[in-house]
Length: 365
Image 1 (spheres, one colour):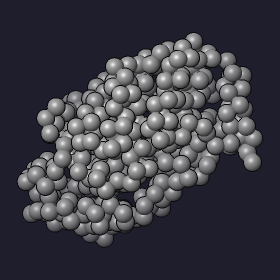
Image 2 (cartoon, one colour; image 1 turned 135 degrees about the vertical axis):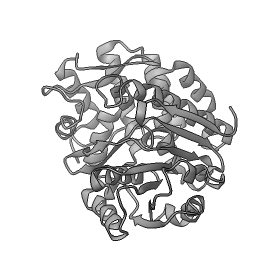
Image 3 (cartoon, rainbow, N blue to C red; image 1 turned 60 degrees about the vertical axis):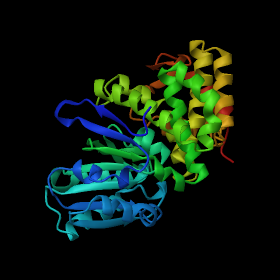
Image 4 (cartoon, helix red, strand yellow; image 1 turned 90 degrees about the horizontal axis):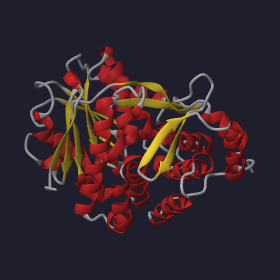
């Protein structure tokens, strides 16, 4: 792999490039040259990332009028109220329909800024400049935007593809260890759902990722984006195959919303959710126990939680029923036949799911 890589999301007229590598924000013309025309820019970030990378991003946007919108940090602020802050900033800055929204930050910033771009004047362009590992490998790619609701995760949103994704791996140098580990959970997900060889690579190299070795991080980001780009290109609006990318998320979203947004990071909830999905797969689809053990071991070595909070089975089931994959009242789950092979299905006994949740989540304290 070269120091800098370019992938493409193939969506016809909505196709766009993903640039991955160190120093991309300092590469002359890369960001501003990826944006349409000489349009004005609304730079959206949060109170943590803007002081670290805002000046670098503005320098990369030289020659354009740039207005700033700084949001509070954290999943607890991924709300309609915060969406309103971005929309108000766009109006106050007198941004027109040819403006560009640039999302500089992690998944929360990207989701909110992208949703604002989808809504403002019925849709304006936006670019993703992800600064967390989780955003670089997952949430910045594919055009899912939105906010949370007390009744469930990401219930309000839109599909709106960015014009470019620029993943400057230098930004990971300021990422807290906990956020890095949360991102590794999403990387592990890709191996589990569709690439057994990549999962094996992660088993041998998770220590290098935790140590932030550039070549290891670069490979993990590229492979994750390759897999997501291919799936999104075939199923942009999650009518089928794209749902596999939600491995662990039906359980994980219930953990996030049930524990209170922000108590568990998204990647932490996905880690525990993947292990629940694996154990359920062992019970109802015959996933080998050794595969469950391998997944647990890798998650533990990555410093991720493997035991969900004691929300209570009834509460967990209630939250899972609000999942966007539910059809005709049936909770469809991404389950595994073996590491590297996943399937979306509702072909399981409901009592088996209730039994798993009772064992794993018990009754709320």
